[in-house]
Length: 436
Ligand code: PMP
Image 1 (cartoon, protein in one colour):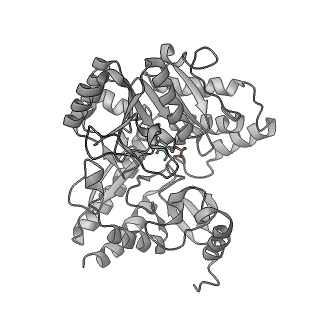
Image 2: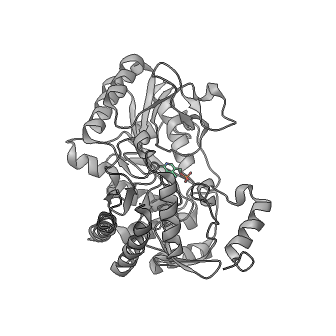
Image 3: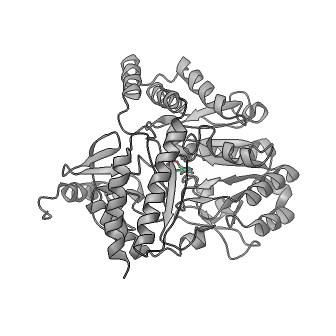
């Protein structure tokens, strides 16, 4: 295809004239891997078609929400029906209660919930709530975890524990991040030191229990156990950011995975997004009544939203949750995802390419490394040029994975064994070219 007949390129050029970088969220621009982003024309099931009419097997699924695949009939029907009844009222509706009931039913740690419109908003509001409820300022986050783009969360580690973090974005004043302590993921010693020195000032520890923003890295059981113990001991709140893992790795979310392994385990607060909106702008945060009732209008912590609990978004989320609650849904999704990562691993091994992969439910990650990494520094040892070659080799063959090595992947219920087989064969062909 010449540049003049490539409609993706034409659209990208048009977009770049009007929208910074041509995209409305940075990772879409293919900056890490180079080349022209695929502009999506339409999607159905496990596939989308780009502006050139080319079909792609979609392992991004809007970065997680599309757990049923695109255009699931029950979800479409619910959304269409809701839209006919009105787009937005700025007044309460019954469906908000139904969605809250559906979410709370599957998460024993959550008694009350507030709906918002994005994961960023949910995480930001949770931090405010944790600070308001504890009367403390300090928060802990981990390097490689992403919790949206609120100022206080755009921080990277300083040179040592005694130093404060540095903003990772221009426009974030150093004083705004002075209360954010950034620690290494899975590092128990650093965690213990942080609580020993600043425990009485820590409002909350926010963590992605299975980090999907440094590809796919699990918090180890001993590390998670220590997070829980130290938070309890020092009166800090343990916040699970399950925007990505919520209703994606299991019906009970990542907290059910840790709960099954650590007796009595649960987080204090949970941040949700993505799957609970089924692809519509919807997110939430929740926890015990005593903490949640600190929120306005009953409590002193202010939080609000014109489009919060939007009637079309709640219809979409509710229909999605009903489908994924059906018996064996997660069993089958997990088996399909396992068959993908096992297939990729087998193909890489056969071609002598270093490869390590992991998955939980319908979320997966793989690395061009000999072993699974445990933290951000180890993740970044992946060779970016090799990953870019793999990405483009797959893209050419109609397989669409995340255009950056620090992003997780997603399998939906619409992916078939045939799709998986086609993906593995495409990967095998690319692995042959990666050996050298
Ligand atoms: N938390 C996590 C764990 C996420 O993965 C994301 C988005 N990828 C967010 C928060 C922010 O969500 P949103 O993009 O909806 O603002």
